[in-house]
Image (cartoon, rainbow, N blue to C red; front, side, top):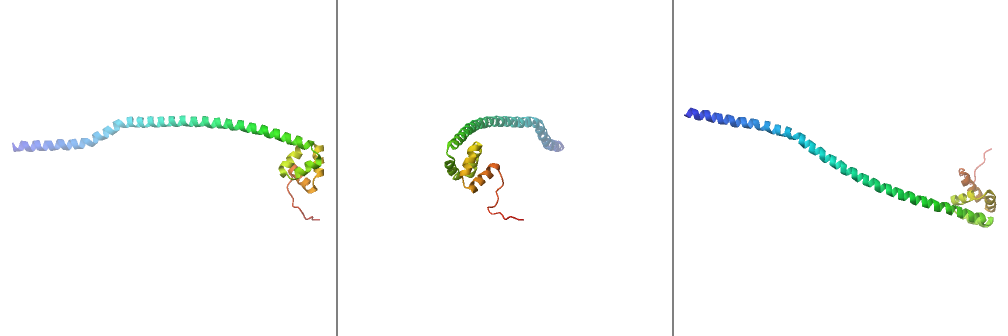
Length: 158
């Protein structure tokens, strides 16, 4: 009987040992079996996240396009007002006496004064420039022709 107990004990320990050896194999098999399902779930979550981001981006694009259209409309109205103001200012200066126009244009920013003179008809522009100080008239003519600025007292070389 003692021998039978030894054999049963050895068999029981062999079965336990076999169960321990098969446990990592079962774990590995379980991980292999669920890997595809886990991968599919991860991809589905990523796909949903990308779809949500795409919707958000489309919404932002719509907002930006609306703002761009609003700014383009504002710029169009602004340019129309500036064009009218330019035309109005040119008409005012063209109807002024040349000496009065020259005094006002001499005190203006040179680019604005040059722009006004450039838009006047040639007869009115020449009359206004004739009434200005020669240095200021030459300076405005340089701005109109976009000539480079020179030193005030250039040294002549012969």
